[in-house]
Image (cartoon, rainbow, N blue to C red; front, top):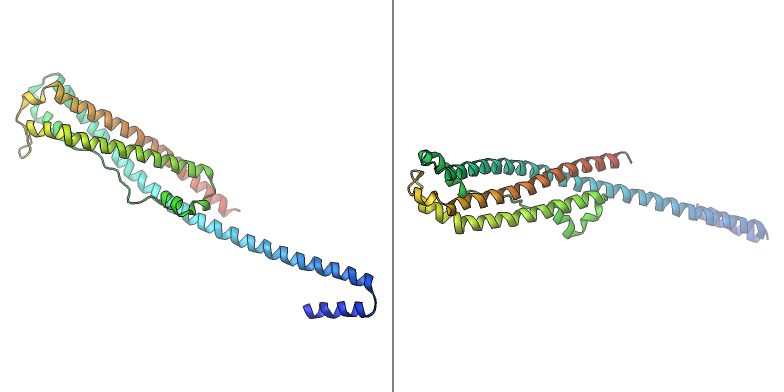
Length: 239
């Protein structure tokens, strides 16, 4: 094709047809520019499709982790509700000085040694941020939601550390003094039926309720984020 263009140009110059040569040259330039623009458009389309494919992969991976987090959070909340109920019963028995139900109280006291420990092995979102791959997630709203979820996890982790320290420093020594772990019975009712011991239940309830509130917030944001991800994936598939 280039050889043919060259022959035509040479013929026009040889015949002295400079007007036609100029028009021909302009036409040739137009064809070349058009070809370049088409090639760029095709290349841009290919790059856009590649970016969509990468985003699709990351969104599915994030959704998978969020779904796993949701399952863990739901289990944690269920466990916290059970512990809170038991703590409330324990406080009630102490307030009423109900020493006829020591076995029931003992089952509540032993729960003071329990606390949640929600941990994730990894964070897809943080990995994308650190690697710079987060640029492939085009939805600003999804990114903001993921940031909010991470913030909530950081708060709950601090609460869990606080609760673990309180159990080790305060609850565990008090329970150790008042119970026989082998039989599961209270051996020192005078230690249990005190305001100081009851405060262990109060602190445990407060921490559990704070953590529960953060987890419920995280669940709400996760549900919203999963809907956003599904919407973004559907949008990409139809564009």
